[in-house]
Amino acid sequence: MKATKAVKASRVAAGAAAGAAVLVLSSPAFAHVTVQPDGPAAKGGYAVVDFKVPNERDNASTTKLEVSFPTDHPLASVMPEPVAGWTVEVTKSRLDKPLELHGEKIDEAVTKVTWTADGKGIRPGFFQKFPVSVGALPEDADQLVFKAVQTYSNDEVVRWIEVPQEGQEEPDNPAPVLELSAASEDGHAHDSSDEESSDDARSAATDTAAEEEDSSDGTDTTARVLGIVGIVVGAVGVAYGVLAQRRRAGA
Image (cartoon, rainbow, N blue to C red):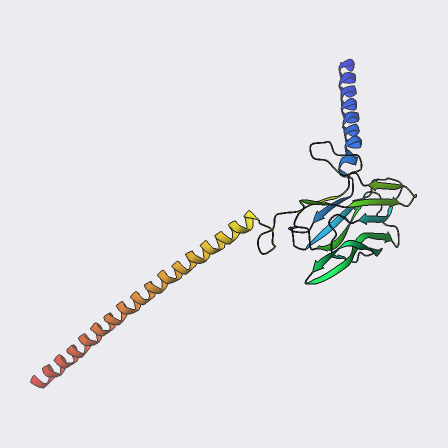
């Protein structure tokens, strides 16, 4: 009996150790710096994107983040949102080929944004989002790659600069990649759910209008019936009054 319990205990311990190993080995796969759009990121349009930075270390905080913006598809407008506890520095560089924005030619664009912590930064077990408004997004690309450098309070530097390749395993230090959605003629992303919602709204409006029309028809019919009934009742009352007067006169 004791031997059986010992075997079971050893199996439980082995399973727990294996589970812990899986967690330890798999954690880097989802703990890298990423970029996520806040809503659609349509080609040719503008978007707000969040650079999400998790802290991977148990004994140090993230105190600095540098994000390099693509030079093959430069963005004419880059505006970081203020983040409490962090200072931000925007670096611009001259373009070899000027961009055109709202009819004006722009010969420089943002090539790097740097956030530096004023205090403790991103502590172990936490993450931080750094929002940036960007545009106009390129129309001739399906994605944008942003290379990031993460610095810790112990001076350790992690470079998230490896570009993921389609059909290959994710690299150890992948660069943040922003996927772009297709744009319609008015510059907005196509979304089948939006189209379905619009169709549903139009259908609901049509049904409501039909119900109101039916209700209106019913009300008009009721009013006409009541009017006729009133006329008949009035006529009967007049006839009864005349007959009563004649009877009193004959008496």
